Image (cartoon, rainbow, N blue to C red; front, side, top):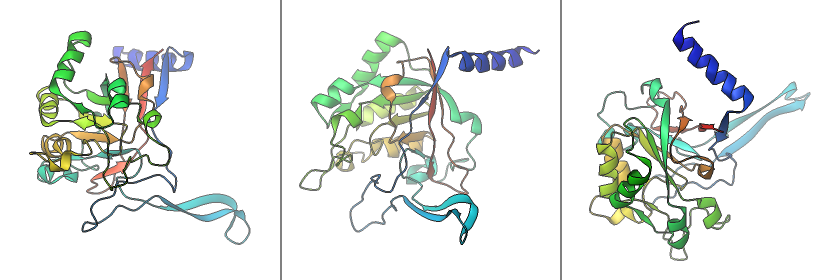
Length: 263
């Protein structure tokens, strides 16, 4: 057996004997799953709609069960491609059908901001916070995903996951411009979060609005949002598998995000 074949065989063995476990980082798509709402003058994303075609009944189909589904590319746990944002619209290989598929398997660094987010739902991830993380765990490797762990599901009300207050203002954590620039300097694969968007909820009015979308996608990098179970990942050492659907000129897509984690 070749050396490369031995590596893959060892991975299969590790998965079967439990020395490497698979952690599902994906929320379940369902009709009541919230989608981000834009100001009313803009177009809106469709919620997830599931319509039964047949379910083992004689009239519609006696031996099979299936559904039609309607949803936005950016519903549930989903991937953002560079073409999603105006800053990435002219980049090569910027859509879900043209991105190099080797980019869909990558190591991940998990930045634990759960205590900070619990104390302040408008917590801002800064460059200083990232540099302090590196002092403890080492430099963020090029080509790695960086996930911001907030344990969001444990913080916000299950009836108001987007965390919109009585005045209609959303509140959730995210990185500032300098933090995003630092990640681009590190040449990361992309940035991921458990919240409804990769950007801080209040960043629409910043000097560089929505810096994660504006700068990350302008640099040809990717986003993941609406993840869960980031508390099951180590700060370093896990590998993420995150291939979006191969939609022609797709700006993104729902997907099943999996992590391979040493037990």
